[in-house]
Image (cartoon, rainbow, N blue to C red; front, side):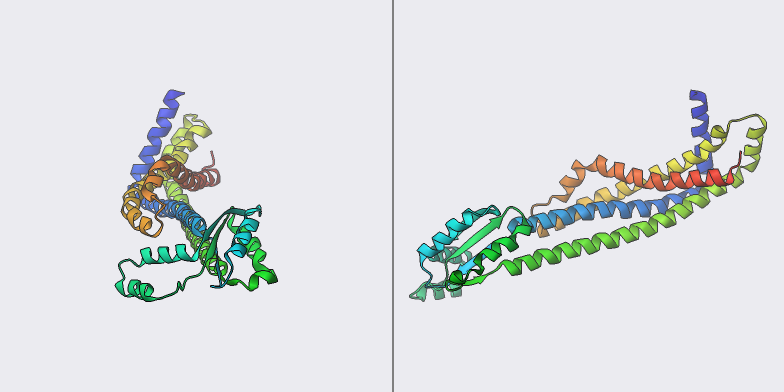
Length: 302
């Protein structure tokens, strides 16, 4: 058993090196397909993190008219707390809003002096509301459609925030669809190349195959080296994809973190390195090994 396995592996490597130019071309095409698949996985992870990050920041901000009584605002706050969709409600009074504004523009002398020279506070009181689920914001927004609230509410920023997250989700979705299409195209090309590479190996070894038949070699023994070649193609493609992507992820990670502060792509990649490699290996080997099996069953009649 061990001797048979050793010979299968040996003949598999011989077939790989015998047509090394075709083998290298096959591995490179498979690598492009595996790299596209790996990039799709990473893009999907970054996109999900980006959406989650925006979802954490999104809220409904309700701004009240300057003459809105504070007691009425606090009553609305207590009513919101009773809603099952609401995670938290923060009340920001006019004075607190002014202090926040001053701190934010502490280094802008023109704006700061203009605020100091005013005799009245121009800012409005507001409520910042966060939901448990971003899909529940529409339900919370409908709470303010009561006629009595319209007399004291100035504006609600929910629609603006919701538009941002919808656009981001659409961009991520389109990116994933485009990446999937590209990966499928590359996978088809890789399968065709692997198919022809194994077929060429079979035709170049016709005499050896004939001798094996004469000495009574089993069908499994004759076919297995060509399937093993497909495994070599798949493994090298996945390995090469990881080798290329590792420094690439390390390089782009700081730039991703600028746009999505909560995402450390390099740490995430390292933490899931073997999972990514496993997915990549499964993907590339599925293409190469399945192609090899199809070739062997169709053209290697033993």
